[in-house]
Image (cartoon, rainbow, N blue to C red; front, side, top):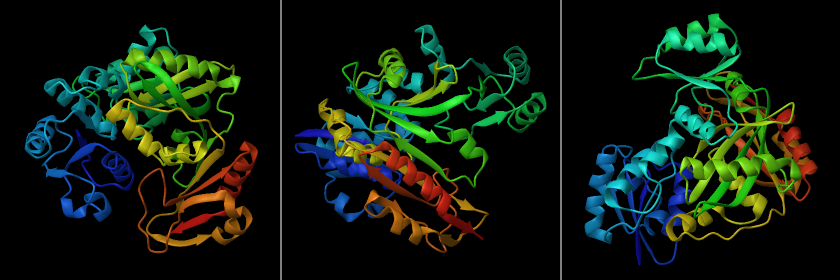
Length: 406
């Protein structure tokens, strides 16, 4: 039996799908570390977990080590240490380094977590990224802005996805942003050129330093635009033609970028742009499974369970590549207004029109609190062998369904 520890600070729905996949692996004793108490764990997963330790701060390496020492007496020394949250990757790397556990260490984790450092590594490897500056003062930020021009993107260097990310159009906007969150050498601000173009993600499996499998996903509209306009219902679409020659530039870049950043084995999530002239630029990369239902979407497009495949990859260093027999997509239903869900219009019409194209959904319900997340109050996932059918279905959903808040 192989002893494996999974760190899940809170029992979030998506996190628990990964926990269950790891716990269900044959020949595995799974120990679980969390801040949430064991009685919050669903009974079906609790039955699969060999041991549990509750700690005060499951993001803190010292707390994780305390939990692992306790689990050592119950399931034996851990041979693998797992976790899916962006914020966990450096702490997990630190603990792996201290205990000699195989997997990504803290230095490689910082290459992914610190987005300024990530871009520096990629540029040093000759790979295309947006121009950037890590500013420890307002003066440094203004100097970069005046040399690079506007618009610019302002974000925390250890952000995740598009959260806490803003577009500034001019010096006045930048000054307002700097007054709201003044940069310091201890808490710097990352500034980037605003790349104009279509935005995609490149989700991939790296095995022993080699790109073993990947998925291409299109965003409609871009995540930054979604954050700026909280009423926009957005989509992500996975074309069936994942091997299309137009994706060769990002395949080539990713195959070099991920090992350069230090990922030897794992599932990664890369955000990238294609400019109007056809050139590409990497925005940022995470060394962890993607969020926003992407793992579920990829599972539908490839007709296999990516949650289970990720667990087997991370525990046994095994992965079997799968073809992509379907296109798939998700429409994210975001409420208009503020408050709780008051009404949802258009669901019946969409259900009649799309029928079996819908393979999964989480629909908003009256009285449901506003999510506060860019994912919105619910989603609808569709799948079909033809990409054009999925595209049309997604557009029909976002034009027809309206979620009213109040």
